[in-house]
Amino acid sequence: MKLADQWRVAVVFPRQSSANNANSCFNWFEPADTRRGSGEALSVKQMADRTKADLGSSSAYVTGLSAGGAMTAVLLAAYPDVFAGGGIVAGLPYGCATSTAFSWMNPGTDLPPPPPAQWGDKVGAAADHSGAHPLVSIWHGTADTTVAPRNATGLVEQWTDVAGTDQTPDVTDTVAGQRHRVYGGKVEY
Image (cartoon, one colour):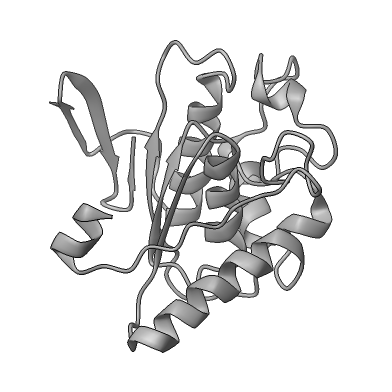
């Protein structure tokens, strides 16, 4: 909260309960919780709307880790008109699972991944939206044993397709000792 106070930004911390998910994680894989206008995604969107209205703000950003990262992808897909951007940390591509999450989390499924256009089509079908899509920042470590790092590749493919750019980075550099890539100025990994 110290940084929020310093930079004068409002922060909302949605929380899951074990009554909704035994692991107290977001249900990023349940269709009823990931569709526009329903479930957990709608609840978080309403929190953002309320905070923006209370503060007279016009923009909101979303971020989350693991199940929260996967829910970030859900929110960016379902509500591109609400969120200007988001940071997906150790998350998964939007729409990769519709009932069981574990095979997608790790090892990242045994099936061959769909091509980027099919990943992007899942986002396109999430909301009736013709404007610009949110900026996306993807963060994933290489030693994650809960959410396989190959999910980051699916995220890059999904969001670069949505942004209308290819999977060849325009910028490749190092930030804090880690590889950093930027695609079309809209997606970074």
